[in-house]
Image (cartoon, rainbow, N blue to C red; front, top):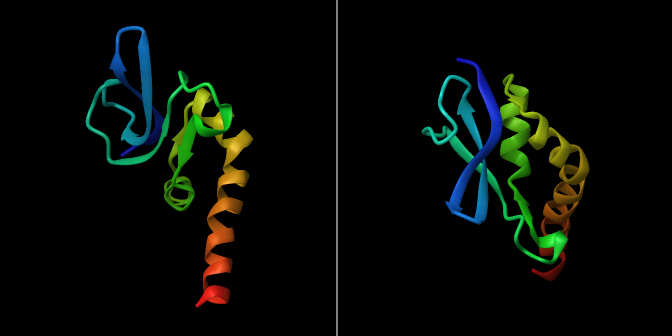
Length: 98
């Protein structure tokens, strides 16, 4: 099965909202996804809060051969490292507080 990481449009007319999903490449744009990997909401004014990613799951799907679409690849190259650092910070801070 050829898996792609792409955006699935949700929301309503004039109010787009996207889920970033791992999906079989033969599925239509609104098709059944294998797994949700994040969200993208272009209508939020604060650009830092528009995107959410599950970095560990994205890395997993890419390791088993999933390819990202062009738009998702741009987002991943721009923000994936930032989300990985944010995920690592609370994990490093938890043992110190316990």
